[in-house]
Length: 102
Image 1 (tube, rainbow, N blue to C red):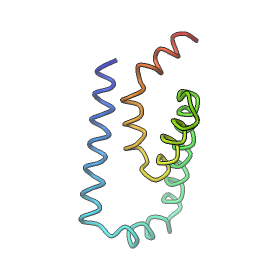
Image 2 (image 1 turned 90 degrees about the vertical axis):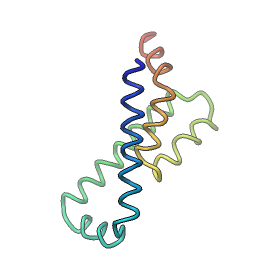
Image 3 (image 1 turned 120 degrees about the vertical axis):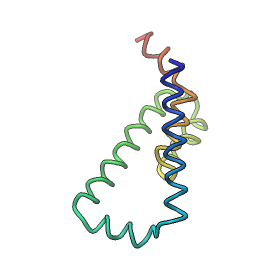
């Protein structure tokens, strides 16, 4: 379990690093417009946000209170998989426990 949490944390850190590089070296609006103009760009965005919805459902099932659900789910759609990686790193033991109980 600790190895999985470590890999999730490493992935989140790596994603954060590449986002920072992209912010400092890229033009979000120009490059984003070019990507969105292509069908695979649209497909990728739909895939990304569908993944956020699926992750939000899991978060909603795991978190106990409405406040906790909102705390984790709302930023997910703005912060993306960096936020979901953090949530999984923190909640993986609980998720594993819930799954083992059935």
